[in-house]
Structures are given as C-alpha cells and as structure tokens.
Image 1 (cartoon, one colour):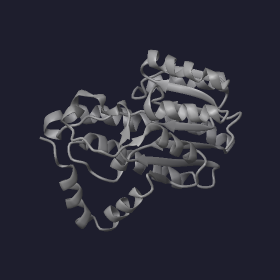
Image 2 (cartoon, rainbow, N blue to C red):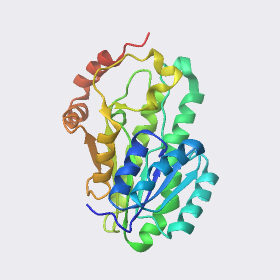
Image 3 (cartoon, rainbow, N blue to C red):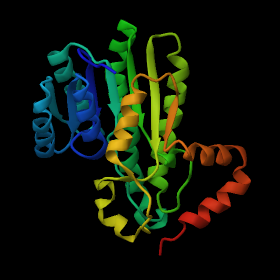
Image 4 (cartoon, rainbow, N blue to C red):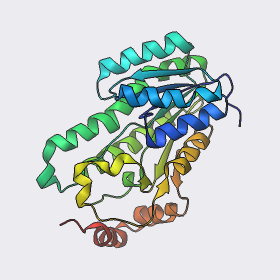
Length: 259
C-alpha cells in the first residue's frame, strides 16, 4: 500500500491509536497533519515522525470547539492544499453510573467524541466531494453496539458516531468519497488513565494501539462501512443485533461489576 503524495489528517494524534496511525501512514509515504489538544505532546509526536522524511504539520486544536476546528482546517489546507484521508480518532471516556457522574460528563463526551467528528467531517468533506476523491475513517468502539453499564455517556457518543457514519455512507455512494468506521474492543492506551477508571474492573484481554492503527490504515481504502477488530467480535455484534432479548441480559451480567 502506497500513500505517497497523499495527505492524512488525524485527530487525537498525540498518543495511542492516533499516534500509531500517524506513524503507519508516514511509513507509507503520506504527508500527515497531527491534531490534538496538548501542544507539547503533539510536538513530541511530530518530532518522532521526522525520520520518515514526510511533511508533517502539528495543529493544537480542541475538536469539541467548532471555531478551533475551522482554524485548524485553514492551516491544513494552507500547507497541503487538500486532504485525502480524515481520521476522526479524538475521544475520551468517563467511567461511572449516570446517577453519579451526571449530565455534564455525558455532554463533554458527546462534544468531543461525536460533535468533534461532525465538525472535522464538515470541514474537509466539501473538498473531497469537489475532487470526487477521499476517505473518512471514524474510530468508534464495540461500545457503539453494546450499552455498557457505567459508560452511558461514552456509549451514547459512539452509537451516535456509528449512526452518523452509516447515514453518510449511504449519502456518499457514487461520490468517490468513502466512510468507514473502525470499532475495536478494549485497547491498551492512556484512555484508561483517568481517575474515574480506577473503579473499573480489570479485564485481561485488550488490543495494542498498533493493531488498531493497522485497521485504521486498512479502513482508509476500504469499501466497507464498519471494520470490527478483532474480527471474531463481529459474531457477538451479530448476535446482539439479531437476538437482543437473549444477549442483553448476558452483556449486563458481564459488565455490571461496578461497586
């Protein structure tokens, strides 16, 4: 796979899946625009890409703020002239029962995880449509298909991302522009470093950020709506959608361990 001469924008690029995805795209020859809130970490991530010899732009931006996304979009287009691939990866979660964490936590997760994706898509999609070329990769989660206890706000944001993407997928048919959702299970990143996750039960199996980044790169040229990783989990999603009255009680028993 060769991305030489192509421009990739990645949000949430200062760590985890976003940072690993940037390295994989750069290794394939792509010019990369890194987007994240933390300017210091973002600069460090950009420095690590120097060895690949590709153009790199670091843009400090809070994607939950529409005006900052518009400013970021102008910077990217001024430097590169276009965007071929947009990876909407920025996101975070808060662990806790809704009755404890409240509406503010749900609102903040929706603002970054969902609206941030909407703002970035709105910024770069028109140019893709004009050129009749491009791909949008939205990094969701298996939590887009399963309501997990103590993560109502996060699940809501990912359900919304998947629904938006499915609608957009149909709208873009025949336009030359694609959209693919990458939905991994639990991933070993700093996502779980937040204070609220100290109460979350520990699970033994989790994917590496590099493995999910590999799925992101594949998604950027895929005709599929959704790539679930690992692939075996697709069976669980199928059962949930087909036999929800059987699966929902099981899901609740597995995840309802918060004290």
